[in-house]
Picture 1: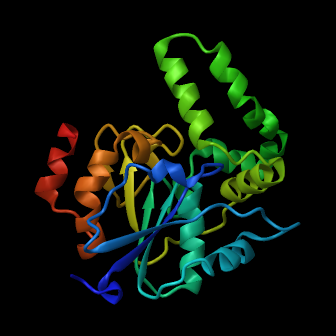
Picture 2: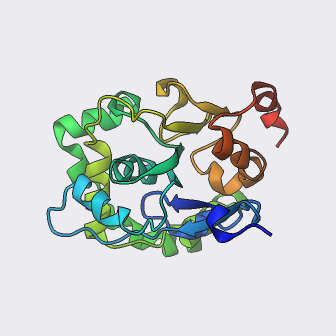
Length: 236
């Protein structure tokens, strides 16, 4: 039996407004890894992204840990990494720098249009499920209701502002980027140097969890994925 000190501690950061249950189907071999799920904290008044990252990094209790962030959680993971001694930094369905943001987000940051977004709409997720028609929309509404539980408008406003206005120009050295080629939030055409998940969408950590269960251990241990194995991802 492996001693606890030999375990690789893996911390997961959920996406914007999401709770840690988005990782509920991610399974890593227990003899090698121990999973820790981080939950969003409410930002302080006028708190910068860097200060928030510093405050949240204190929840990572192990040195040489692995930090994995999804979407906006990937942005926070990169900011947190500056205050941590990590074995591996992995982002999923996210971006590594400002140039990977879609044009609409870059435009919104310049014009300030992001301030006009009706962020209180998340409070209507429950109602959307009731009025949704068709199996696809009903299923999607249930997913939103289940996973998007952080409804505080102060947090949402803060998160959108810091996502759209993220100023990083150069990617963090050594970051491993896993991205779906059908991502509708951060289009694949803007993404450089990533491990591609064929057919993967922005929520692939939820609906393509089998891919992550198969390949994530290897990516954590080696920092890369076998090219021949990557060609098989369409089968999962």
